[in-house]
Image (tube, rainbow, N blue to C red; front, side, top):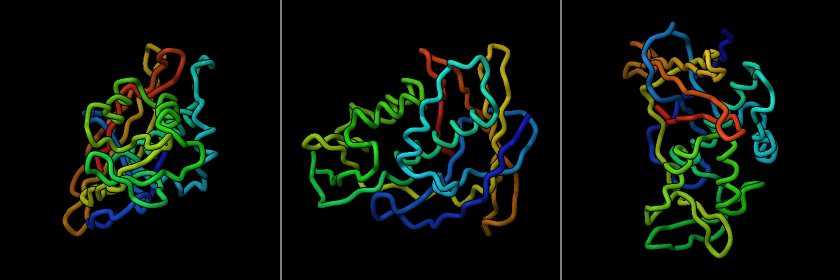
Amino acid sequence: MNARKYAALFLSAALLTGCGDLAGVAVFPAVSGGEPAEAVAASPQEDGVGPSEMINAAETTGSAPELTEDEVLAAYDRAVAAYEWFELNPLPCVGPVQQENGVKYQRVDYVGLYTLNDLETYLESLFSEDVIARLLDRETPAPRYRDIDGALYARPDGRPADTGKGAATAAVEREEDGSYLINVTVDLLDRDQATVTGAEYYAFHYRELNGRWVLAEFDLVY
């Protein structure tokens, strides 16, 4: 089993003040058991991957009989980055603020994502339909993203990451049915944000659904 370590990222507890101002971290839905690892997910920008490369890299499908650990972990990295757009830090925005249902929005400025359909198509390369439905939340009057005059707009607010979480490690495990389990261990920190007091264990199922390899469930713990 191979493990990918992530550099610890400590974030300010101050609230976010605009689109794309904070590169966050993340891990996942709780599963107990397994060997403690070390770890935390770092900003998706740290590997030098630009917006267009990130979009183009999304086409990980189930054409191969078996995926490599690097392929699974790369899909995990892209999923973390995309999920953060909905919780920690929205996509970068430009231009004047527009009001929709009393909520402020700004136009998204990100290569390859020009409409809500573009965003949904990209999410389909990463997540199951259940996860996508939760992210886009079409029933709410104030979704994170929406089209205004044919262009993708974002609600320019987010939240700080949990400073009580420290380093994390992601590791891949092959399941008997051919799917994969991405196991993540996250250090729990004391109030000094340095002393490790324990750990939490999380896992995501990565499996082929409708011809695509996707994460069947996903969430952020930071």
